[in-house]
Image (cartoon, rainbow, N blue to C red):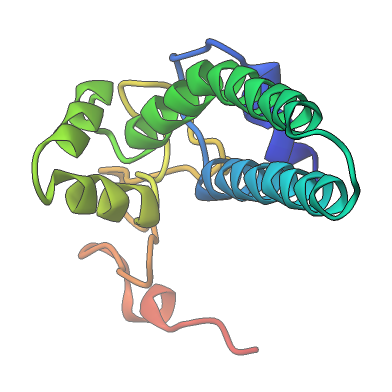
Length: 161
């Protein structure tokens, strides 16, 4: 659960890398908060619409809720951008790729980048947030079930579970 709020702790931190879980849990938090605001807006509007209160009272309450929603959304704008940039960094892409979202179908490309696994091991943006070692040129290093060419046949056999 703390991973969901990690982007709020790193409010304007555009450096480093973010795991898929951090990115998507923060997106889930934003969606749930938006639904929460609209649920409150609907309940207040429904309760006030059924009462014999004046329309100006309804407008004031609805305006206040919408104002709070806009403030909340603006407050999440910077951490949302920061976690998006860090997510792109995890797959060794520049944060400038986020601008592709403003081009038709470019948002689909950015979505794909947020869905793919990050590069294993450290990259130019920092260490792997999953703690993986990454690719190496030393013999016998195993990654994603690929075995180094110089490994002996006994080393190439997968472990028996």
